[in-house]
Amino acid sequence: MTDNAVVLNEHTTNEQAQAETHPACRFSIAPMLDWTDRHCRYFHRLLSGHTQLYTEMVTTGAIIHGKGDYLAYNEEEHPLVLQLGGSNPAELAHCAKLAQERGYDEVNINVGCPSDRVQNGRLVRA
Image (cartoon, rainbow, N blue to C red; front, side, top):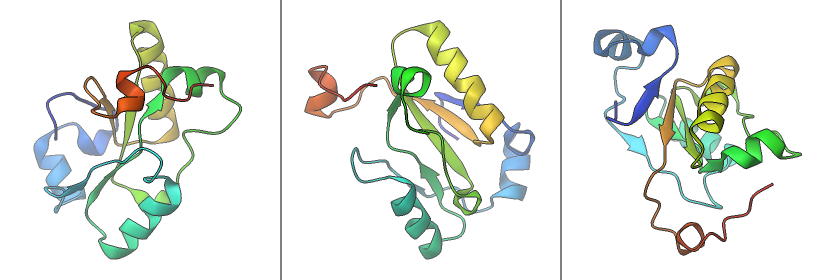
């Protein structure tokens, strides 16, 4: 588990539970903006049943105000981590709660995306 991950579900509350539920989560597939959508993650899951998968970064604004369902995923994608971007603590907390309600295993707060689009504030927001 990463240091900046927020643990959400009962099966990820401690290292032992994590190891019992997802024994091979030592390997993760890093998200890539515009590539790691739910279809790509499902394909990755077909390749490996134990790899920890991450969503591409989703902004709090997209989740709160967007017209799409940015939290949608296939149950087969677990263990699954929502990568969340934003700067407002209240919005981050609200979106983390929504992720918990939707069944995500963890939330990863993105604080240093190297993408030029993100660094220059050009990330598409809702």
